[in-house]
Length: 244
Image 1 (cartoon, rainbow, N blue to C red):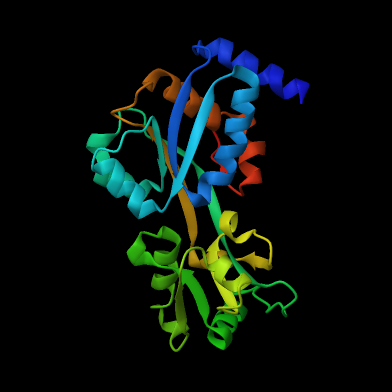
Image 2: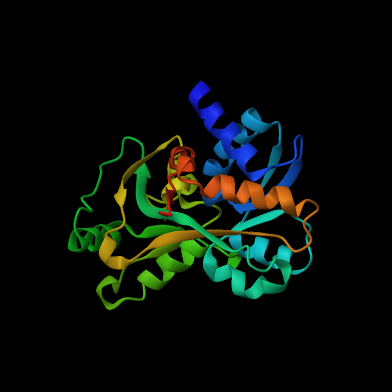
């Protein structure tokens, strides 16, 4: 812990952040776990505070696009073109990738999804719960698109309220697919990642908000969460930090 504090303190001295600052960060739930871990280490090392507000990607895009005040916004890269005017030019930064994974209720049999054919068979046998794309779920949109592929013909898709892992934990659906960061909750077992052949993952980027109350500190925090040493905290939220 002491070593981490020294690393963080050295980083802050290098970038010249002002002490005792407070910023507002908006993020989808999929990236929230890693960001909260980073906010804690940031506060410990610097005295600065990053308040983390969660929400769905679509709602965040709409709110920020409509002028909601924030210092830093975190979203999938595909959401940023719609809010270009609401972010500070030159600050958009790719952060990393969160795998998508399948879950079943704790104690239930684990279907074999180790290969694409076996994964397809499991989806067809049980159906699949996924978050509502209409409500702005990027991961849900990927599952919905997956179900339109010819090899998934006949598979039943079940739209859940909120993260599919919660619906699985409650027994509402037997099998769910979502981001690994949101799937790792009490009451469910993560049985594995979606086969890589399907190319299903959630990319995450971040940018300083154009209306930021403290754009300088927001920019420093953005550098903090994307430095190589941040990988450990991001792993707590199942995000693989991009290589710099």
